Image (tube, rainbow over all chains, first blue to last red; front, side, top):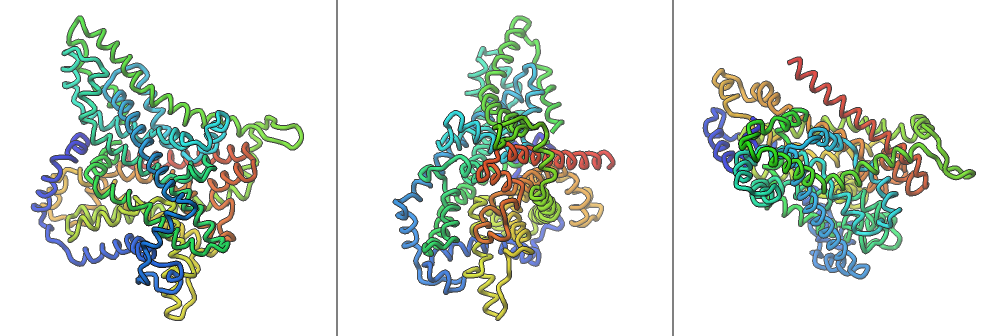
Length: 305
Length: 316
């Protein structure tokens, strides 16, 4: 069951899926079941629908009109507000978020691919023990590490720098686990043997043979680390003081607490809401377009233990 | 997980000694390459995980006094922690969270995954993606948004209640706050868990239940006695991740704190408590002990979950 799961995620599964549906004696679509599921869908989508509607309203309309109906269309003015408030700091937060997330995700996926490939395909003493240590680390709560990491970073003056957010995000034990499982199945030993017989070095084999086969797993780890870093709040909250280094999460949270404190800045409500909408659009779009990748990657993680 | 480790050891039994002359040097090259390939990851792994872990353990054994500076305190911080009501209340709150929210979330995820896998839905893709989409929403934004939805001023629930002449539901009151937070976390993570289970269901060989169908078993019967047992490892994975996640709860309550400062206090969850101890009270050593103890609780609970699952598997 395990061997086919990942690789087939790409090619064979769609065919089998259709076949299964056709064969099933229960195959007719059920309208009551669909209606039931649409109720569930409403629960998951309505908050986002509210967010879209609310970000089209002025601050006054937020209070005076019903949440699920439009007031005066004020979206462009809200957008103008969030991008000009405090000298356009929101734009800086977007740039920071993209920068932290992309560097961390590419780096983590690369490190995890190399290590996972080595654990799966190269024989060296101690590999089993080292891999067990990595697996054990998946259980360590990351937030328990944040405080000592902050103290260590402050000793070497790394706090309040972009590296303070990026360095811890480069390490993904779960990514190594995923890539080890993926490499074991996606890279045939015979191919590696053939390359070795031809006299290729291990590094060249990895770069020109293995990496190509590992690409879907690589993209999965990359995507999940991208989300993890994009959404991270605790780590940057601890590490950063300078508002110009904040990612979106910390910045929006700061606006929210100012808005709730209500210190003469009532207009912030519509800005927090519009800012929230802007901050989720890129990830939602990325997930919709890269479906094929993350779905096959999740198969790897979920099926093999 | 143990299975895959064992598999790694036996992965290339046939590849040895094919060429009598080159075998040894190929082997040595593999050893060198192996260490080189894992080195970049391990350097950062040691620096970003192991070092902070040990440093935290070390710090937790000291305490800072007004007179005499930092002195060795042995396990005194831990003794204090297990008598600290603020910490214990937080752990207890997270245990409630674990026993109420996690089952609800995972049962919903499993139910949705099974419905999707049955292939009997119209709008299959739309349903699957809609349920998953909250996962792409940062938990900060999820909490902000729900915070406003819960709100007494322009929250739609309060508006609707006022519309029919009722008072606004007190989502962030003492009695309701934990439930309201559970709702946010459920909203965020049902889809993620559903996708993991759905992906596992997709790879269960059809033959396994074609036979049951021929014997006249219904969809529900097949789901219960064929499908769910076949994806046990995927379900276990979601349970463990949920255990780790719920004890670490921080973002959602920390953001709602601004809206309900009297209900959600500085020790509402162990993580918020550790954060406040370290950065507000400057009690670094005690904060380290709390964080370490929390990590220990998480490890123990995850381990118990795994053991229980294994024992069940052994029995059946």
